[in-house]
Length: 174
Image (cartoon, rainbow, N blue to C red; front, side, top):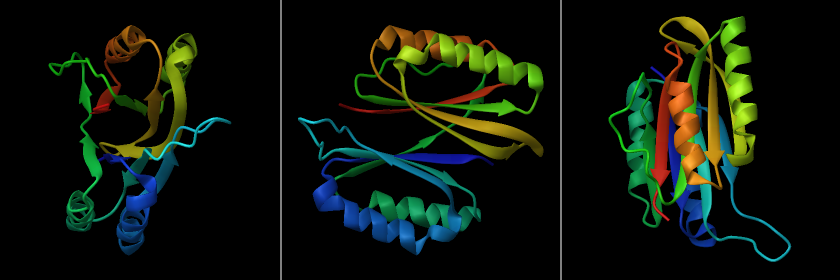
């Protein structure tokens, strides 16, 4: 089973140490970790985000998830992957993370890369890792989207039209 969780930290200065402690205590179940926040010459945001790719025993992963959920000031959501059209609303007013599980096939890789290039102006962050999905090698792509929200919907719809790909999404409120 592929497990990806997203974390929104509302105040990095206040909560980052508690999050770091929980992640360190459960490092054995973390395969990949990516953290990011807004940064410019004028701004260093106190709000931050993390993407955690879990790869451990289910009970150990659940223990980490529960520990993170007990920390005040953060939001933890799990990305659920599905094939085909989604019943879930694609509307999201906050930070959107989109995931794709792509089976290892040369033709799919080219097709997915072409789509991601087409929608490149709304992809702020991209993370790619190797994964096994239903016993077969796959690529796991996680995207942080920014900009024109109608393009988020179009990108997700285009990816969902490729039957072999499983798509997941996390939306954090603004």
